[in-house]
Length: 244
Image 1 (cartoon, helix red, strand yellow):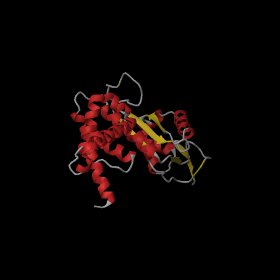
Image 2: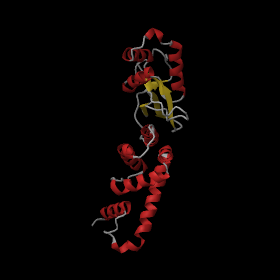
Image 3: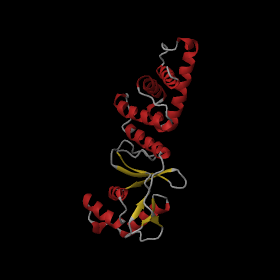
Image 4: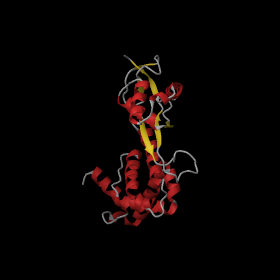
């Protein structure tokens, strides 16, 4: 058996707690298994702290044990492990007794934070810092996610049980490399979806979004749009203006 295959088989045995394939280490196998379980649990708590807090310590340990024993656990790195656990959580939330209504949104929100933090650098359109914020085509930070949640899990609020649409623009800052997010309206959500496809002016995007969202364009405040673009540009969500 080749070395990598043997390592993988040993890891799988440690992960699942099945020691049959390695009788030569049977005397210390339980300690290895316990150490691996604790190490992976700590890593996943760091990735999903709110999820662990909501689920509770006892149910969390049960989830971890079941995940390690039954799911295909990757060894390529923390992002791969978090992605596998994320998919596992989404599939098993319905089976968690007395799970909070907003648990699914918490899992999604926390995973996107991790995904953006670890994502590779993405190419972007060449841009200039000089342009008209309303009429020039805007270059959006490509390292982003547009997210729609049912509950405002991204803020401390007493309204977590009240279901409603909450729109977020989540992105990685181009120089600080921190993951940031901005709560936006459905109108701006639709507009940014267009900018994510190609650079267009915010006025064009808003006009299209107004039509899609059944909003009267005459009711949209131009000063508010300008402030919105200015905020995004100042905080690294918009890079600048596309060359024409």
